[in-house]
Length: 127
Image (cartoon, rainbow, N blue to C red; front, side):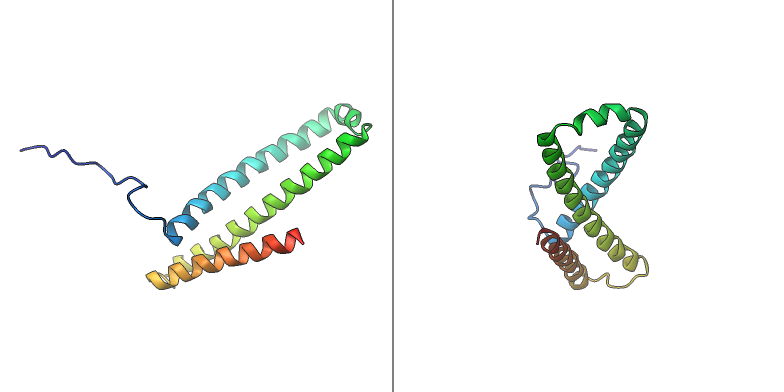
């Protein structure tokens, strides 16, 4: 049997980005980021409890308080947008598990709907 010199799988650059692939990739990225941020939150709370005097020395400097305040607010806003996107896309996947809306038109429409709702939530947070 003659072995053909063909690629095993097509690369991502062959296909043009579609709404379904973009939403799927961002769903995985948001899930990974949320898991990592949850682990970081657990470590932060642990170190805050165990080494509380270390964090108290930072509270005495006013400039660091303002810097950490804006950093915390920015991270909280970013994580809330990720949570909303992951939540609404998870609902979309749960509806697919019921075998509802699996045709190409509904899949693209619900992907745009998830992105639209997430964008609305993002702008409502920023205002």
